[in-house]
Image 1: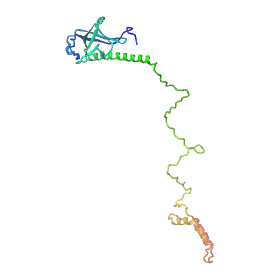
Image 2: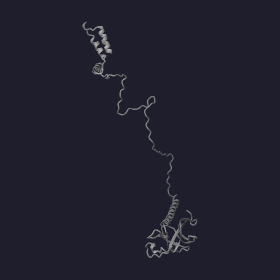
Image 3: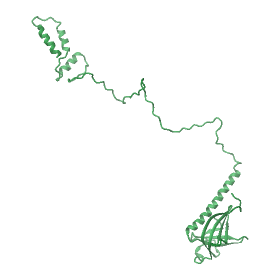
Image 4: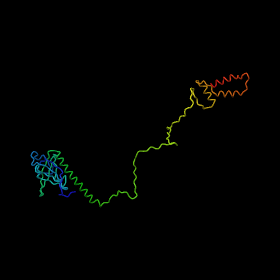
Length: 262
């Protein structure tokens, strides 16, 4: 923070402001702008707000020459140096002082509400900055006396960070040749491989032996082939002795054999 009197900064400048002579306040009630002669101001000029250190100065100056008409020093806001009126937001009461320390109260008014708003905000910002600077200086003055919080790592202390990332897929099982094998679907059954032989006849799986196969093939209406198992049964029947008249001639046996192979 700069020392008082080192330099002067300008906080706000308003080119048009009116000054009014106000009657003395008879009671503790707030000032009212309606009691002033608003249509006939006693002085008109420009208003500047400056600051030296923590003190702000409201200066009323001539528009052309810049000659100082009056000023109101301020050490806090809100305070006695600047007061608002109860019936308008464009008018204020200032306590002006001369170099000898004498003071008086005058009324000032802005023609535009935006100028009155800027005047009020400039004072608020300055004293907000003054408060912050005071708190910083106090913390710097008494900060070393209190215990300090040590947030550093102790010797040998480590920290583990668990950074969430994208989950990786589990590796698929591979065969001996390194090629991935597809697993069967859950609850499914593997169908048997198709038969290598193809035929125009109805095919019946062999499940019960030669006798059952013969019965199934005899029951098929689309088959014109005599099952070879009949030949084996003829051989069994041929073991019994038969009359010579019932033995068929050799030519008939040859034709029967040809019929079976057909």
